[in-house]
Length: 116
Image 1 (cartoon, rainbow, N blue to C red):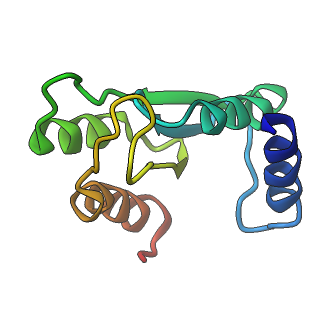
Image 2 (cartoon, rainbow, N blue to C red):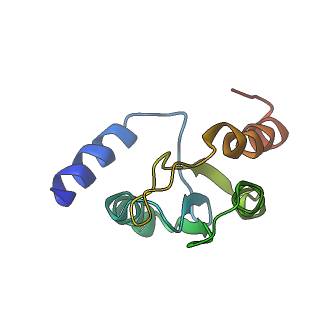
Image 3 (spheres, helix red, strand yellow):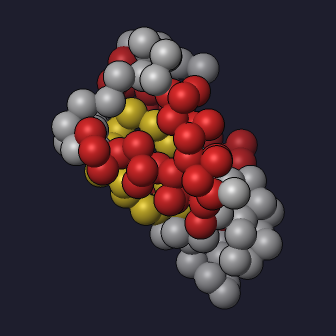
């Protein structure tokens, strides 16, 4: 199953000219995200020299403010993609997706001159 997801995800990534990953680029994921997602990110990122950066979701006592701060702290000028699981794998947390997306939107506008 994971291999099929990896292949499908990689096929979806290849034809998208707007997302060209370069060595030292970053993809941000969450520490409590789905394992298959992280495996797929590594599968795509490692051969290209792209780094997977994990923003910490503090379990077992998650606080929305801390999660948002950790995601914002993981974003750099090299971040090209941020993957956030709305419902996490290990803890089944439902994350404050809209609040987490705000730093991503600001990052996109500041570094690429556009926003969502």
